Amino acid sequence: MENERKIEVEFESNENDFRRVLLWYHWKRMFLEYLLMIVVGIPLCYFLGFNVLDIKNNSWATLAFVGTLSVLLMLDIYRRCFFQANKLSEIARPAKTIFTEKGVESTTPIGSSNRNWESYLKVFETQTDFIFFTQENFFATIPKRFFDNPDQIEELRELVRRKLVAKAKLQN
Image (cartoon, rainbow, N blue to C red; front, side):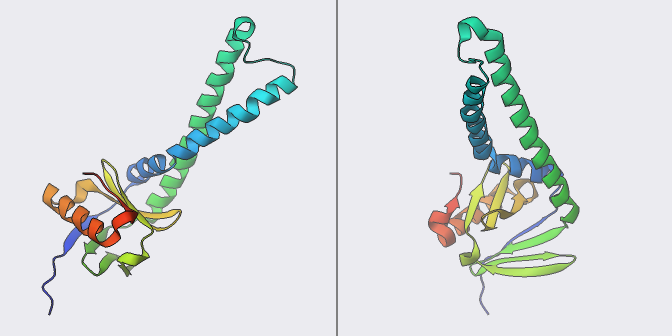
């Protein structure tokens, strides 16, 4: 029998964990939506006969236009992430995940799964989480606070780097 090193983590993600990861994941989308609002909004204002870029004559309107777009965009993105995080937390269960040289085994009260390393599209590490993508918009997150110690986090980093090479975007 092989004597291979295993990294075990028991965790239960909550809505704050999912919300944090969703906002991290969608920040580029927020920026692109903001640009789109500007690109569409400014010509629309010209079409309606209002020059929002004429700051000298319309400074209040320019400020109101840009400010309103920014606030509405942030509220919309946050609302969507909040709703999705609440839905994800409803189906989240306590889990035990074991990382080995062969792959990742996850066990919850309702089932278990085994994935080899090749089935992951990408893995990201943020300040607070490891995020494992199995599909483009489908991820599993493991908050770092559930690891036993910093050495266990470093072991996981090394294992992920070895197994996923370019697919891994990790710290350090």
